[in-house]
Image (cartoon, rainbow, N blue to C red):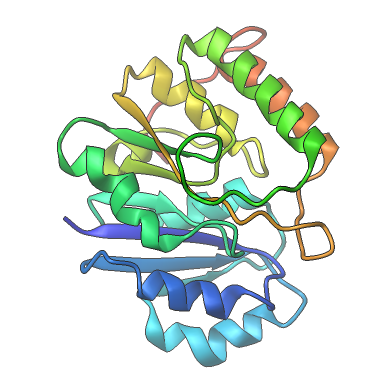
Length: 238
């Protein structure tokens, strides 16, 4: 089966080339890499054009900054693999663990696999206490409304059957993608598995971008996409 690796990227000049190297070395023989640059201003675009474009399937350049969710929509339109994985353009997640993520899909046990940073025996960098508390609250609240028992709803590492992901309308432009997609795949009755992954978290000084305001927006998205205050449709992409 072919794997599509979708990499949303914004101001990651310090890490983007190393990320591409590690993804290319991932132990999955048939894969395509699709990078979407969300209008970086730190030299990332120049690195992509000069040193990365010839090595991967596709680079898409946004003319303005739109957000992670918008970048994933652009990447998904280019995907042709049987399975899709989202890979952040930093060094927090290890592409050597792709086989662990896609294993339940390859065995026809799962439609979606979440890589949890909070279970498993792999190394986990110790970083921010309040981030962990906030993640636990968001995951608990999401689980209450979806009737799932995830341990890490906000994880970046998620693998999907491509046809399932492309059957959904992704509405969120920024970091609301995670609770939105969780609500929508739960409503689709998709078979969801969770596997433990390693996590090499970074600090704000090292380029981490998520803020406490993103946590508040994620809370709103949990309510919105679980149809507490509003109704959104889950039809195919335009």
